[in-house]
Image 1 (cartoon, rainbow, N blue to C red):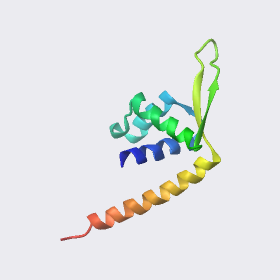
Image 2 (tube, rainbow, N blue to C red):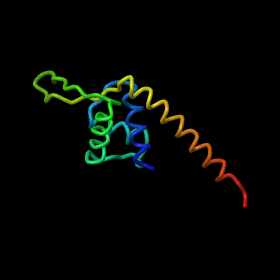
Image 3 (cartoon, rainbow, N blue to C red):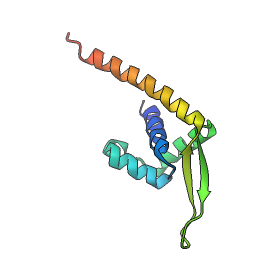
Length: 105
């Protein structure tokens, strides 16, 4: 379940603006807490899969003042639509779980 949630959260961060890998790792941890502290070996397969599915795309951007070029990821129109659909399913799941967990025996 965490895998699908991570896909959704990465896409949500990319909805705001283009970001590079380390930036995504830092934001996930800063904004989501230690549960979402990812390693590169976890994040990059997610990015590659989302890109293969056409939900995000990547672009190399040359660094300024001799900085190393960075690969930035950004959301596609298909990704925006998919994120909305994924989030709606997520809301249905969380609502159902809350209803079930709130039931008394």
